[in-house]
Image (cartoon, rainbow, N blue to C red; front, top):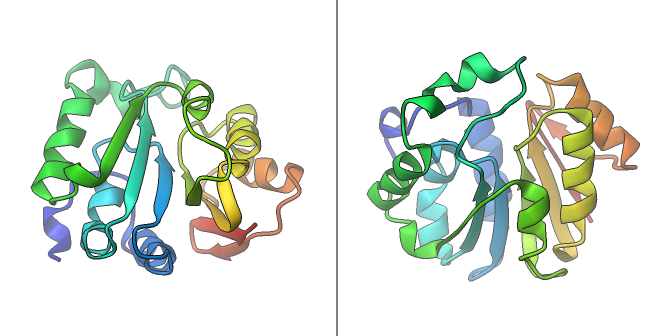
Length: 183
C-alpha cells in the first residue's frame, strides 16, 4: 500500500506499524471497535488486513471534532467539512466500506448499542481527557471477548491517557504511541 494515499491525520508510520501488528493477530472474520476515526487514516492503513481477514469493524465517532477549547483549533476543519462524508469516501476508496458499521455518536451512547463480550479488539482514540479515557476503558473493556485486546492511541502525547490507563488498573505493553493489553 502506498502510504502517501492515506487520508490526512495524526497516525504516524510507527503507529501504523503497531496497529497492523495488532490487527494481524485477530482471527479471520473477527471483529473490532475503533473509537475516534476522524477521516479514516488508521482504518485505511489496515484496509488490506480488514479485507483479507473479512474483519467486522465498528467505527465510532461524532465526526464533529471536540468541544474542548484546548483542542478545538486542531479540529476547526470539522466546522468547514462534512467529516463523516470524508470518512465514508476514504473507506470506500480503500475498499472496506462493506466491513464497516458506523455509529455516529459520543462513545458512551455508542457503548449501549454493542453487546458485551462481542469483539476481539477495542481501540480507544476518542476523548483524551482523563474522564473520557477512563470512561471509555470502563465501558468498552466489557465489550471484549475473553482474551480480547484493549488498546489505544496517544500514550506518548497525553498524560491524561496514561493516567486513565493506570487508574483503570491496566498494565499494558507500550509500543511507541500505542498501548495494548490482552484481557
